[in-house]
Amino acid sequence: MSRPITWKIDYDGIEKNFQEIKDFAVFTVEPPWQKCSGLFANAPKQVFLVQELEQRTLDEYVNSLHEVEYVVGVGGGTAVDAAKYVALKRNLKFITVPTVVSVNAYLTARAAVRNEGIVNYIGDKFPELVVVDLSIIRSAPPRLNRAGVGDVYSTRTALMDWGVARDRLQERYDLDTVGKAEDVLRRLVSSATDIHNVTEAGIKNLVALQADITALQWPYLQRGKKWPEEGTEHVFFYSLEKTTGRAFIHGETVGTGSVVSTYMHGADTGLVIKELDSFGLKFRPADNMISHEEFEKTIHNMKYVANEMKMHFPVLDDYRFTAEDIKELWRLLS
Image 1 (cartoon, rainbow, N blue to C red):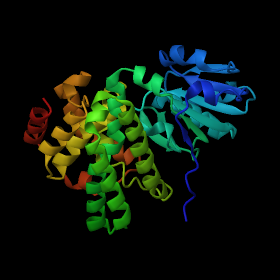
Image 2 (image 1 turned 30 degrees about the horizontal axis):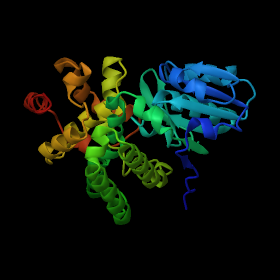
Image 3 (image 1 turned 60 degrees about the vertical axis):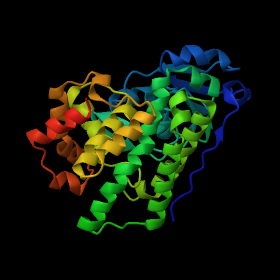
C-alpha cells in the first residue's frame, strides 16, 4: 500500500502562517520575492535566488545552507523544486508558498532536476504545509496562473497513452483511477471561465484539481509510472527545452504537447484546441516564440528524450511523423 500524501493547504496567507516560524531559509526568484518578503514576520536566515535547476547548482545550495529547521520555496516551479531538493538532501522540514499556480510543483514530492538539459525526477519530499496567499497569486500576470491548467489537462492525453500501454504492453489499467481522473478533467473544463478570469474561485478550483490529480498519480510514481497525469504531452515539453536550450512556461508548452499527442493518437485535436482556448492558455508556438524549425526538431527528438528520461510510451515507438504531419500540426497551432 502506498504512503498517503500528508500536505496541508492553507489559504490564510503568508503573514498569518509565518508568525511562529522563525528558523528558516527561503529559495525564491524575482520579482515575486519583492512582493512577499515584507509579509514574513521574521526574517529568513538565508535567501537563495534560484536561477536554474541543474543538479550541480542545487548541490551547491545543499552545501551552502546553514543549520535551519525549515526550507521554504517561494515562487513558481523553479524556486519550489530547488527548495524541495535541498530539504530532501538535508532532511529538513519543507514548506511551499506558490506565488503562481502555473505548475503543480508546489504539491508534488519530486524535484525536476536537470542534468545537461535532461530532466530527472528526484526525491520523495512532500511539503508539510502549502501556504496559498490569494492576494499574491492574483497579483501575478494572469497568463502565469492560466498556465496551471497544463498539469491537469495533460490527464486527457496521459489516459490515451495509458490505454495504448494497456493494449500493447499489458500495462495494469485501473478503471477506478481512470474514472476519478476523467472526473478531474470534467471539473477542470467546467471551471474554465473562472480560471480564464483568474477569480478567487478559479484559483481555488485549480489548486484543488492539481491536488486531486497529484494524489491520483502518486501511487503510480512510486512504481515508476506516470499515470494518470503525465504522458507524451510532457515529453514534447522536455524535448522542446532540450532542443532549444531555452526555458518555457511549463503549462503552456505542455498544452502544445497535448495537441501534438492528441494528433498522434488520432483523436479530436479540434476539441483540445477549443478547450485550451477556453482557459486563455497561450499554447500556440507563436505565443512562445517557437520557430517552425524548432517545432519540427522538437517533435523528431521526442523519442530520444523519452528514452534518455527512461519514459517508455508505445505510441512514440509506433508513430513516424511525416513532413505532412508537421505541416498539418503547424497549421492547427497557427
